[in-house]
Length: 223
Image: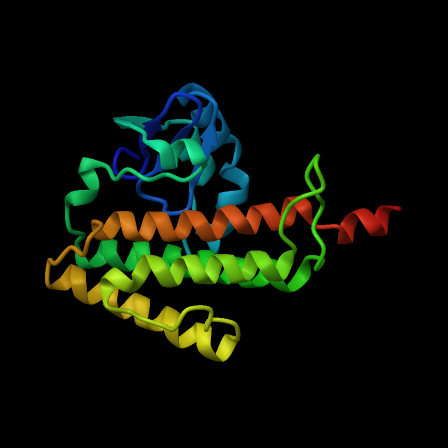
C-alpha cells in the first residue's frame, strides 16, 4: 500500500490539485488542498475503470489510505486549471517494471478517451453562459496539447495534424517508445519523465470525464 498511495498537493490561492503519483491521470482539483483530496477520493470509482483497462486494481482501498508526501506551491497555471509543478519524487527514474506499469496506465487513458469520444454526443452541454467546446473541438484540443507536451521527447508532428486514427496511433506508439528509451538511458527531457506521463494522462482523463459529464445522449434518451 505504501508504495502506491502517494499523493502530491499543488496549492495555489484559489485552486489546488491532488495527484496520485503512482496512478497517472488520477488527479483532481479543488478550491483548497483539503477539497482536492476529497474529490480525488470521490473519483476512485471512475479511475478504477482506467486501472482495470491496464490490468490493475485496488483503487478503492488506496483511496481510503491516501498519503500526502509533498506539498508544492502552485503558480498561475495552477490557478488557471492545470497541475503545473512536478514533485521531487518525480525526479527519480523508474525501474523497468514501474516504467511499463506507468506506460500501461497512460495507454489505458488513451483507450478510455477513444471509447468516450466514440459514444458521446457531438454537441456538449453548455456552461451557464452558453459557452464550451463540442466533442470534436475537445478531441482536437487534447491531441494538439499532447503533441506539444511530447516534443521535448523528440516526438514531433505537424500542428493540427493529429486528426485521424491513422495518424494518432503511430504518434502514440512513438510517445511510448520515447518514454521507455529516455527512462532506460536515464535522460530527463525538459520535464521529468514521471511528470510527462502524469501531465499527459491527466489532460486526457480530465477531458474524457468532461465529455461524459456533458454528454447529451443520455439526457435525450431520458426525455
